[in-house]
Image (cartoon, rainbow, N blue to C red; front, side, top):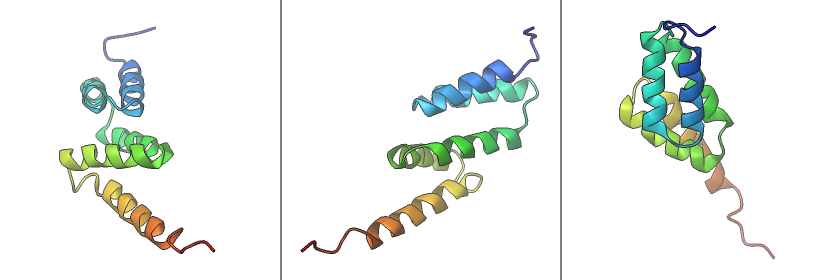
Length: 97
């Protein structure tokens, strides 16, 4: 049964919107979930999970969004982007012969 303090529908809509690149809308749903009792830590864990499952181009885009919101809180997104760039520079650059 849905109650006014049930944050689960809000987290679901937040996650779906983050996954389809509607970041502002996703964030607003997470804010509503927090108003209903969802913890910020749980939200951050869920955002990180969404980020880690995403393909590279989506990670870059979502990482940029999160880092604009709070570069300290979401510093893990920057570290992930940096390590991915190092890997891409180190592979596939040699000429094939």
